[in-house]
Image (cartoon, rainbow, N blue to C red; front, side, top):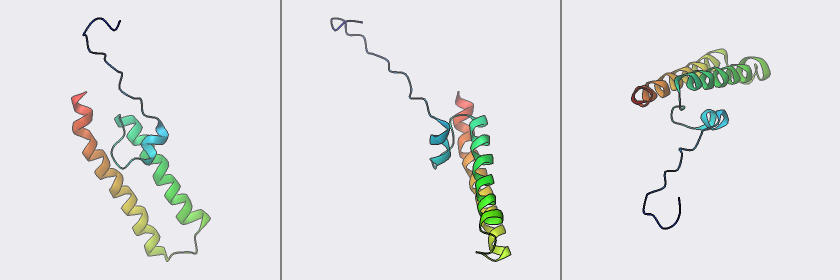
Length: 87
C-alpha cells in the first residue's frame, strides 16, 4: 500500500502472552488459556499457603484465601464466556 491511495490500513490485533493473561484482572483471550491461568495461579496460592508458609496463617484462613482465589477465577471465566462465544 502506498501513501497515494486512501485505503485504511488494518493493523492486526496485538497477541497476548500467557504472562499477560496471568497478570490481567479480566479474562484471558481463549477458554484454554483461562483454564491454564487459573490452574497456575491457584497452584501458586496453594503452594504459598500450604507448603512455603504453612505457619503464617491459621488453618481456616488458608482455606478461605484458597476458596476466594477459586471464586475469583470462576467469576473471571463467567465474564469471559460472552467474549469467547462471539469469536
